[in-house]
Image (cartoon, rainbow, N blue to C red):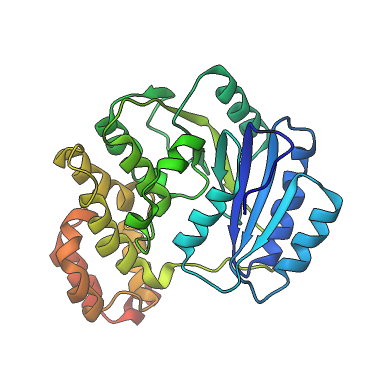
Length: 309
């Protein structure tokens, strides 16, 4: 159930599951929130089986601005995102992955933007990975999709207005892996809007010696070819085909998921093989910039060949 916050301006919402080490570090690093006006941290624990509850309880006892909620059972990640976005009663909600850190300067910039104007979404860089899009206010949905649609998949890149969350079509994007992105573009599809992009401020990944981040790498082709293409092309018809095509291709190129070296590395790890190729090849022309025959060649070469290289 929602609860009353100490202020109604902004909240950081963190969905988490079995990453107590990262959550501990995240809550410690976000200690500056004590001094930040209008801020709370909300944790939605997806029924973790590690020490997540103990970590969260410890911080909650020490800090009244941190709130902890736990699901009765483990649910799909997209649904946990939906739940944690709904808990906050703030004017804006920053959805943050449990392995990321919002630098204090970036958080202050977000607060300043919420006071300066009434935006539907405020977008931030992540690990400085966007280098070719200058700061601006977007009012053109196709330009936003073409410029930053690929980047907005990252949990931590977006600060959502409360009205967007209240009107979001969550059910439409469940089980897509891209609910956090889909609800934005669905909301912006049929109305005037303002989205602020702040590339100079970046959310950064947390690195903890001896603690390994669980990864979706084993599902690379399922998520970033089939599911990604299906998601992009299912966006409302108010988005042009050209903007959808550019968005679909840009992720593999700009995120580095499907650079040539990355494709070779996936073969080296046996995550790309002929079976994987055949199952997802229909989506490659939308998501991988290299000729399909080249990807097929890499898929059929012995994996040890790339170990030698």
